[in-house]
Length: 152
Ligand SMILES: Cc1cc2nc3c(=O)[nH]c(=O)nc-3n(C[C@H](O)[C@H](O)[C@H](O)COP(=O)(O)O)c2cc1C
Image (cartoon, rainbow, N blue to C red; front, side, top):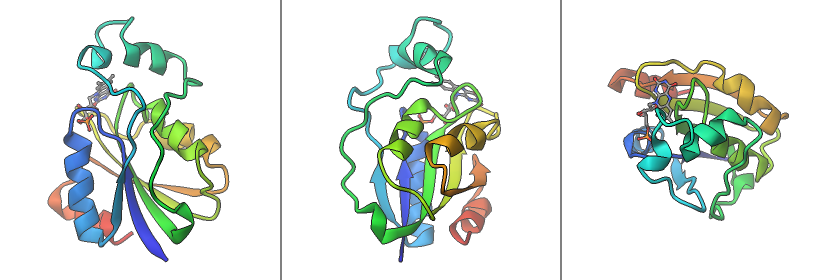
């Protein structure tokens, strides 16, 4: 069985980390792409009416994603990466988990943030992949942390 790094990144930080982690883990990599990309204004968390504010206020929002080009059945471990938005994972990560069958897989979370930890990310993702084992890796990992995650 193989290992996959799947990630969403709106402004590049998580994308850079995902590539480093995929190299360290010898994993395949796949980007979770929004059907409609996020603009800078969409990401303005200080504006209550910005797209990200509206989506994250409604935790049942499920922003559409582009078709994923990997065969999930080939993987038993998925490293799942995202930026922390409002102390959790962006709801587009729920969209991703609900778009495939993750039962029996290990999902190891990694994230970037301004300073927050995982908060309630694992808790808010579990209902979208009820039969997967969701494990917290690291937020803003150091070079050494990346080695630790890659070996999980
Ligand atoms: C809508 C939004 C909400 C955010 N909420 C948090 C937060 O709750 N805590 C935090 O430390 N950083 C927060 N950030 C900062 C991002 O987590 C951080 O910049 C991250 O590295 C962005 O990753 P990306 O470049 O892969 O999109 C937020 C950023 C955005 C755009």
